[in-house]
Length: 341
Image 1 (cartoon, rainbow, N blue to C red):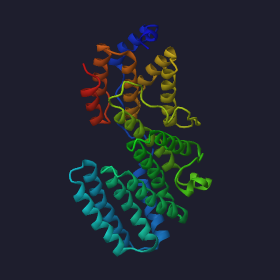
Image 2 (image 1 turned 45 degrees about the vertical axis):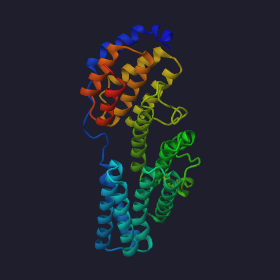
Image 3 (image 1 turned 30 degrees about the horizontal axis):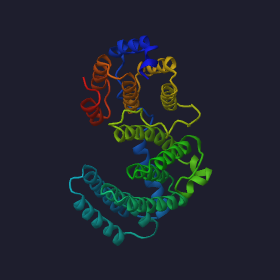
Image 4 (image 1 turned 90 degrees about the horizontal axis):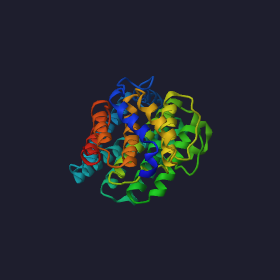
């Protein structure tokens, strides 16, 4: 590898010299609409129409959802997992006592993913899969009843199952599921996804903006996962989950992702001239901070390619400390453990 890179020593030097002038990532919103607010507005309308409920019933469900959010925070921080479970079980009983019919299923689906997270955290992966699947079944049913915004929850549960696969050392299954999910989101092609809605084209067209923006979010989330899961690896970051992906480039965000895939392919195929050309172009663009993680992943693979290069390491640390804004905890982790100056 080092012998091959010598051929492009000039390109590497040019890239390092250009790094101090690379622009900051942008902090303005990358999307035309606040999709989170849009989902809440649309979903409330759909829930009232399908579940035939009063405002007070919706508020009761929303209150439980906020309490579940606090449980999730505790589980993610792992402060007291057993207390988090007790808090969850109290809320689960409240759901059982207060709701019925479609409203019960709507409220219960939100709870089941929290239950799955608990079992994920204690590494009981079979149960984590079981409760994730139960969550997905309820969402799948409700989407078919007309709460179309819950297609996002069906996407999320497939992503969650892939993450369980990764943690359970079923890596190939994880890659395959993520590839299939992204391929569906961008192209409408279903292959072995969990959920009946994926087999019916009409649901791919529903709430187009939610599906499209989730595709972008998923790409950044999985990229971060790949970095964290492989933090000590000397190999390039895994590309099994996107290397065969092809899609129409019809939005600026798709173009960013397409270019990122192209750069990674050139690196892995040892096409170093095209690799450095693409790399330099990418870093000269002031992409939104939402895509900081894609630039971080490119720098990580470049660092692995070039070996011990103090000039590159110093410039990488300076760039990710002063030019990027997202993923603070990951940037700190990489500076302390990988990009050692």
